[in-house]
Image 1 (spheres, rainbow, N blue to C red):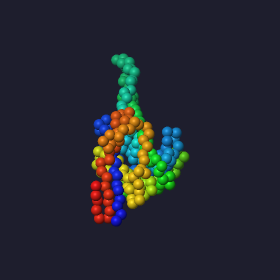
Image 2: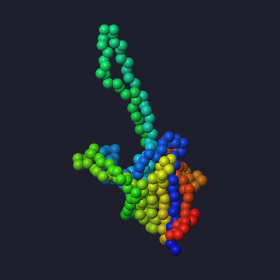
Image 3: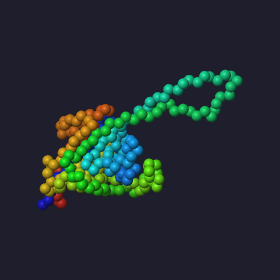
Image 4: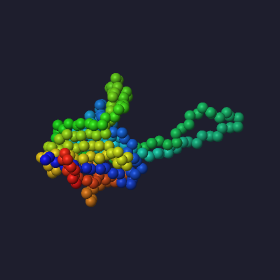
Length: 232
């Protein structure tokens, strides 16, 4: 009888991020529409999950959390002189904005150490709708039919081990991922390297200190499955 071990990780925002909810639809395939800060195609990103306050980038041998905060910064306007009694007020003068938006980012990279360099990514639960992009540099014909997916699987990221990323139905949860350990797979092969934030392991939880507060990954459950039963 073959049994499969599943290890489920959930990402939670600590109170500093409680104002945000998961408003994402799914992992959007990168067909060339994602560019870097220099305007060049960002080929390292295979799929991108956009959510309020957090973006999740899936790379070939790892993934990244791009946390951001948006602040309204007031714009100071010079006071104009009051019109004289005989002057006609300017009615068509465009009203100037009172504030501008300022974005602050913090990125955390998580790498699958010593993982399969030839890993293949498979998708599931494709969206019916899609996006078209016509503003991508050097792509005058545009990039069309860009779908989103509820699930992305790294097949054999380690020998006989898959990792599955899923968008939870619970809108308070941003993303979850689980390692599926098939027969002959070794849990000891799974190694994650966190870069970009101080991390601590507390009560079976990975706490990440970021500039806006804390993020937390927890391992709430693990279980084995076969064709007829499921056992924790």
